[in-house]
Amino acid sequence: MNIEIVRSVSAELVSFDGSDKQICKAARVSTGKDTTEFDATRNRGLIRYLMLNKHGSPFEHGSMTFRVEAPIFVWREHMRHRIGFSYNEESGRYKKLEPRFYVPEMARTQSGKPGHYQISDDQDLTKLMVTHLRFNARDAYMRYEDMLNAGIAREVARMVLPVNLMSSAYVTCNPRSLMNFLELRMSEQAQTEIRNLAMIYAGVFEACFPETARAFFDSSFEGGAGRVAP
Ligand SMILES: Cc1cc2nc3c(=O)[nH]c(=O)nc-3n(C[C@H](O)[C@H](O)[C@H](O)COP(=O)(O)OP(=O)(O)OC[C@H]3O[C@@H](n4cnc5c(N)ncnc54)[C@H](O)[C@@H]3O)c2cc1C
Image (cartoon, rainbow, N blue to C red; front, side):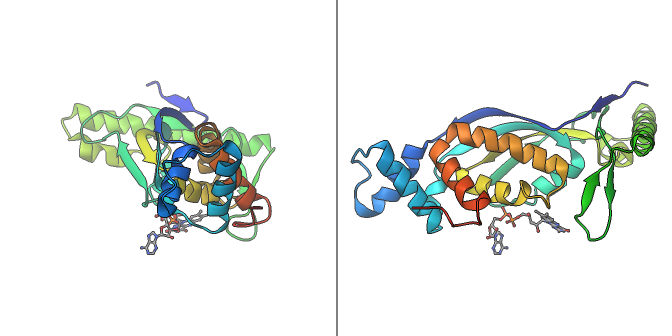
């Protein structure tokens, strides 16, 4: 029985819509200046003003759609983000799930308070973790197939599969909802796997909405949210 071990989460941009300029136009409709052309400097200033003053709704104009592959435990965290996110995930009822399982490169230890994790360079610990995760994945998938072969429905047989099974989904968000996600999931407190996903999203965000992303990162990650220079 062959299973595939996956070492990372992945996300590719499927499509995006909108721009920094469109965000500015949406904001300027309040003063009737949305059809007036402004140069890049004025647009940058407006975006930073909006970010500073938490005038969030202009940042809802625009969208990014990703195709994401991540283990189920990451999806559980991801789907807590309800506002401004749309999801469509592969179904364990309508298709046979693939034998693809996430296994971290290195073990992690925990000490003290919840959320205090350290990547461990202890090779024995990593070996123990990998052995158990691999064995469990192979054993669980064998039981899954055994049930399917006996005629048990996919929706029931899947119950035996662990939360490190990989799953794929389309995720669509807007700049505002993505910024909330990034604020929470790029933090040191977030679990490594969803933080890695957030890093990928952040790179795409910077490419699609460069001024908005710059203002956001200045405000959120250099001295606290909302401290951007206008
Ligand atoms: C480090 C970390 C640890 C976590 N640990 C746990 C945990 O142990 N257990 C657990 O259950 N969850 C946990 N979570 C999930 C967390 O509580 C949030 O559900 C998740 O981060 C989504 O954030 P959000 O509500 O801001 O996002 P969204 O659902 O996208 O909401 C966006 C924003 O909309 C507003 N909003 C949305 N819904 C409401 C509402 N009903 N009422 C008022 N305002 C609303 C809020 O301003 C919110 O910030 C954790 C999250 C992080 C980052």
